[in-house]
Length: 283
Image (cartoon, rainbow, N blue to C red; front, side, top):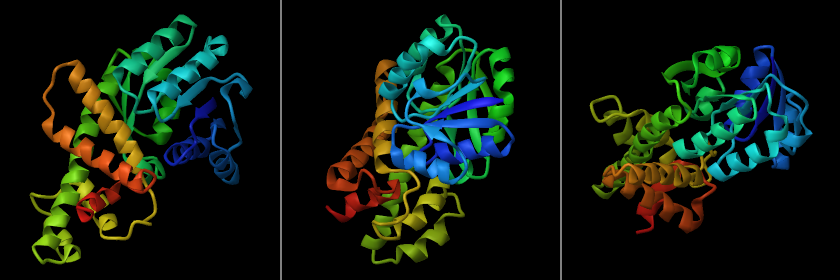
């Protein structure tokens, strides 16, 4: 299939490479020159704007924010008729519902398909994809989705996939902060966190985030960035907004969100999200 992939950044590029390696023809779009250069260095041509792209069968969207999604759709509307759009960004239900309404009216099909698994699973084609949309729309883009990971059908309406991702990001946000707090507690108790981590991660106290982020929390601030603090500022904020809209009480999420904001305010926004642990070290 002919695929346009919008957003070939830290997680988007490995996703695009999986599509490319599956034999599809792919063109990247990214406003950041450094992202376009990285894509081109790995064999994927990339342009700066969607308006510069040719016709395509499938458009995969991996932008960062609801505002970027809205701007992309506004730019793309004149040429979307007949295209199959797959919105894989984490932008919240409202943003996808609004975008889908415009795209469907302009003649495109839409699948809401946010992902979880991070850059590690994106690089191996093992993402979990929460897909919502009509059966026909999902079937049409299945060859592209299957190249990136395992598809889990969650509903027929755009926005339902985002709803599942909101729950996912609630747990991820809290688990990362809980892991950081626990490792800081270990140090405060006079224990070596590097010794504590392997003792607790395999038992009832373990979590995927503890095992994945914990080792990086024990490294310095310049640890390689897998997912930036700013991503969780945005994602935990989306969860808070969604919870507020439906009057759900999420006190643990609010605490986690405050920690990511504190980290960003301390100048750590572009650092790996494991560096949220430094908000304890600075107290």
